[in-house]
Amino acid sequence: GDQVEQSPSALSLHEGTDSALRCNFTTTMRSVQWFRQNSRGSLISLFYLASGTKENGRLKSAFDSKERRYSTLHIRDAQLEDSGTYFCAAANYGNEKITFGAGTKLTIKP
Amino acid sequence: GPKVLQIPSHQIIDMGQMVTLNCDPVSNHLYFYWYKQILGQQMEFLVNFYNGKVMEKSKLFKDQFSVERPDGSYFTLKIQPTALEDSAVYFCASSPGTGYNQAPLFGEGTRLSVL
Image (cartoon, rainbow over all chains, first blue to last red; front, side):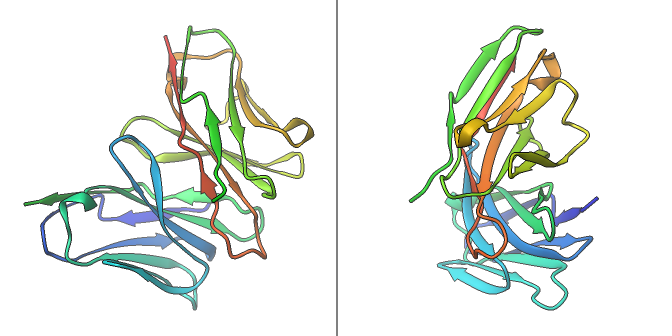
């Protein structure tokens, strides 16, 4: 079945540094969404992309528009409140199944 | 903006009982989903539903599970009977589907505790 491979599984950074998360898809995907799951378990939608790139403050995401086989999430100038688990979720063509990556646990240290 | 509502946020039941998890999806969405997340772990796909039918279900969607959306009301996940390993947070989602550049929306989840 469709697989979403997310990396890294965990990341520990100091405040002010930059990071990049990535999701690779074993098949061509129609769209991708990035979430941060907070300590209460709520999924906060960061970006939804059907192609190209989107930027919001210190966050930027890209979805490979040619082969549609990977997506990235860049965090610039990391802050303590960026800590959490980040998930990508991709929708396939056809039956619109949405598959999640395994998540990246991000810890920002002072 | 539109939201997917899941009620209640926490449900506690005894093993062997039946439970129905309720999801109120966005009114004009066409695709509906259930996911299972054990604490601190991955979001696991259970099932997606379109036009009154199950589109695809995973191996986690056991025979004891069923979904329906009678008369366009709540999208429900029923587990009968429940087992201890069913304890998890269950997330519902709805999506307008292809042709609409709109993100699927996820509910806040229902924490199910099977004792």
